[in-house]
Structure formats: structure tokens, C-alpha cells
Length: 314
Length: 322
Image (cartoon, rainbow over all chains, first blue to last red; front, side):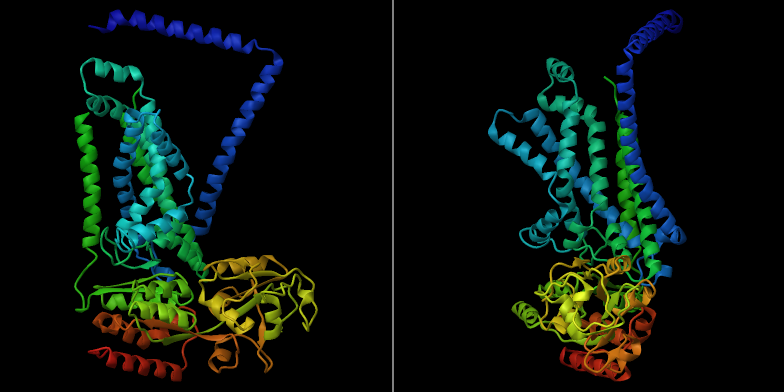
């Protein structure tokens, strides 16, 4: 019933939009020749920039695929590490990495989002300590990962926390490493929520916390998810801090999150295979790169799917 | 909205559950022994310990053995902090390290598990085939810092190319052993070399790519890369000797012939799974060495190591027969 009367109006809108677009395009194309050339040059530079990025990525994938092809099989996912190349796989390291990443996500999302909410919604920017906190978080994002490894060894594995060489200690260290990324992304996402939404909610009598929980946070989930994807992508590839906080290279059993039996992680095992004298292990290392890419893509695909579910247009 | 949120919660919970189930299924019925044995140390010895550990765990599925590669020095550091049970080493423990261990109440003894020929490699195009220890010392001396092969005194035939040096990092037992044998003092080596850390394949690539390249590593790296690099014969005072399994076993490859060791801690030796593991180690080590590209012990060395272990187990409490 509501269909027919509406059609003319949408039709009119469509025509109006098309007309406006044509008019804009027409006025743009009437620009002087020099500007058109400049525009084209700029466009070419943009294409070049994206080509460089894609070429780098493609080169890594193609090289790993070519070098690792002889070793690629499903056994890589099911066999534990071994010092005999014909039966070596990545299962134990893969499980170690999944635990590490799960721990990182569980730590980083509440802490990162909490910090971002405080900084965006509660912190008074005229106070010097809030500006100091902001500055420090931005600087932390640039600290080399090995520094976090040393920190993790001194304060988490040994020292005050004294957790020992367990997966949870590795997760904590990696979480510290990627927290700045999540905080910065979450802040951007929260800031992008239009003030009118907040004002509308407050005007209807909601408290500040209700506004944040019901309006601001759901609206900023896509941006936060992007930050988490970036953080996980970085954490999954880190080797140096993990070596310091106890990821060993040779583990033939499935690790547990809190058990102190030892654990390994994909990049650590790939590095270990790559440094061995036998050619077969170098092939395995390349195959390991593919395994890691598959895992990373799977994790990120899940996050992207989650993000798209919550995507909203204002 | 609510249902989709529930779905996300259920999905993540099931991911968790699958992970937990996967690690639960790891343990099975075993031969009675259980526990964890932590090994760390030399990356040169690691492949040997790993293969032994793998075979051992097939027979004792409830014993978990991990092997790390922190380097001989890095391994002893963890070992003396009580963080590992057995330390892999490509040189003997140093007095300073022994003190650090003693401060934490850790005592240890050495078991020889394989032989190695520290191999000096050059580019295949290099006409030089033999160098004396003194000439090697000129190349690696911390003060001389020669820039070219033509500056090495008494070298035949003469060769003019820029010296490009590759070597392991300072945590490496290979580094310690080489500097001790060639420069007369452990750790004394010119600092302007390409430090490859624990990754000896970089030395292969580097020496292969530089006409005047030179580097050193364990014999197994040379064996796997013959043709890409050339091994120098070493004149330790009694003529040129090429590195090989034979010259190592008969003792003629001096001074770069070395033993590879494991150091169990006295405390770990009291645990039945460690006792069993070490007996298994010395029982299988020569087959395993051949499989993993190591130079096996001579019959005499093996008997010595086994009797050494027997003494250790005798003093360490109740020894179990293999």
C-alpha cells in the first residue's frame, strides 16, 4: 500500500540527483587544460602509490608460495614441529599463536576501549596530565617491539608479576605492545560519532554512561574493529618480544594458556626452520609463511564480518 | 540486534571450547613417566637435542620436552637462573657462568654428545685453500683490522679482494670457541664483521655473494651447502687438514675441532623423567647424530659419556635402569 504513492517521489529524487551529478561533471570538465593535466598526473601518482603497496605484498606472497609449494599440504596444520623435515608441521606453534592472539584480544579490547572512552568522553583536555597521557600513548605506538620484550621479561615473566614463561605472559607482553594502536583507533572511532547523537540521547534524559553504552559504543564498533584488526595483524607477526618472554622453538605438544610446559608461536618456528642448514627446512619456512597468512586472513575475515554487521551510515 | 550479539558470544565461546578440547586430547596413556624437561642453549646442538626429544616423547607421551635456541651463553644465563633443566652448549661452561649458577644453588656437569668441526668457509672463487691459525688470527684480530686479502702475511697464492667477514653473535658458543682458538682469548674479535646472530644461513649467503667473503660455522652447515661455499683447510702446526668426520674423530683437525655438550642440572637429575631422558639420549645419540648431520662420537667418547652419566645418576639419588 505504501509503495505506489512513494514511487514518484523517489523517482523525482533520482532524477534530481542525476541532474546535479551531470551538472557538476560538466562544470568540472570545463576546467582549463593545464588543470586537467595536473589532475591526471596526480591520479597517476596515486595509482603508483597503491601499485607499490600491492607489488610488495604480492612479491612476498608469490615468493613464499613458490618456495614453499613443495611442502604445502594439510599436514602442515596437523603435524607438530619436528627435526625431521618430512614430518615437520606447524600445529603446536599454530595453537600457541591462536592462544596468544586470543589473550591479546581479550586484554586489548576492554583496556583499549576503556582508555579511549576515558580520553574522549571524560578527560578534560585543559588539564596537563590528560595531555601528557595522550602524548605518551602516541609515543608508545613507536617504541620498538624488543623493548616491550625486555619489559615483559623483567616485569611480567620475572619481577613483580612473576608469571613464568607461560602463554599468558606472552599475551600480556604483546597486548602492551599493540594497546596504543587500539586506543588511537578507538578514539578516532568515538570521535567520529556525531555530537548530535550524544546530545539527543542526553536530552531524552539518559545519563552519560547510558549514552556511551547505548549510543556511542555501538556506533563506534566498526572503527574499533579496524583498530583490533591492525593490532592483531601486528601481534601475530611479532617474534623478538616472544623470544624474550619464553616462546621456545621446539615444542611437540599442544600448549595451554596457563601451563608452564612451554609454548611456541608461528613466527618463532618459521624463524627456527629458516635458520637450519637443510634446504627442506627453508622450504618449510616458506610454507609456514603461507600458513601464517591463512591464519591471519581467517582471523581478520571474522573481524571484518563482525565490523560490517555493525556498520552504520549517518 | 540482540540475536546477532548472542551469536557472536556463542561463536567466541565455541572457539575457546575447541581450543581447550584440542589441548585436552594431547595427553594420552603413557609409560608411567610424566613431567616437563626444558632444554635451551646452543643453536648448533639444538637439532640433535630436538630429534632425541622427539623420539623420547614417542615412547613417553606424557613427558613434555621443549628445546630453545638462545645460544650457548644465553642458554647458560637461563640455566643458571633455574629456568631450564638442561643446557645445550657448543663450548665448555665458563668459570663466570659456573659462579652465577652456584649463586643460585645450581651445579652441573658436562656430557659430550657429538663432535663438530668448526669450519672456515670462503667464496668458491677464492684461490686460497689452506690457512694457518696465525693467518686466521690476522684476519679476525681485534686490533689489526685488515681490509684486504692481500694484507694477510704469508698467504699462498696471493689474492686481492676486499675482506668481508661473517660470524655469529656474541651469545654464540661458536663465537666463543672460534675467538678462543684463533685469537687466543674468548670473545676477542674485531667488531667490524657482519653479525648474523644465530642464523648461520646468512653466512652462507653472504660468503657466496662476496668474492673476498669469509665466515665460520658448525660442520653441518658446510655439509648442506657444499658448492655454495668452500671450506678452508686449517694448518694447526702440522700441515693442512680439511674438516671432515674422519679428521675430527682421529683428532687431527686442530685447533677447530670441538665437542658439543649438554649440561644437566643436579636438581633436574633427581627427577626420574630427566634420568630416563639422559639415558635415552646417550643410548640413541650416535644414530641420531648421523640422521641430523652431526659427527658422531667415537666408541671411546661414547663409553666415557655413558660412564660419566652413570656416576652422575649414582650420586643424584635413585637411578633407574634403561
